[in-house]
Length: 86
Image (cartoon, rainbow, N blue to C red; front, side, top):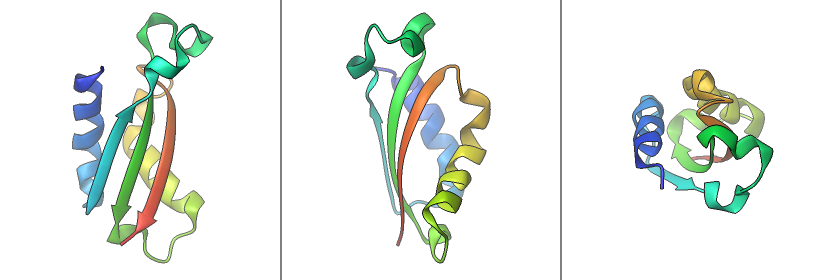
């Protein structure tokens, strides 16, 4: 489990003032995958925020990626996002 990376993600996404934030480490599902080499992680983020109101799904994802872009592709190799307005 990558609790340090999860905490890093959580800290960065607090700027979006989420009413719900789940960070799920799915790295174990990708064992042996080339992208997991060297310790790169796979995460799923479920986030709800009033800042997503009126935004298309792609725009919501961009807000999340903007806060995490320097962590991709390492130490985060893959990031699945479920972003909904509240």
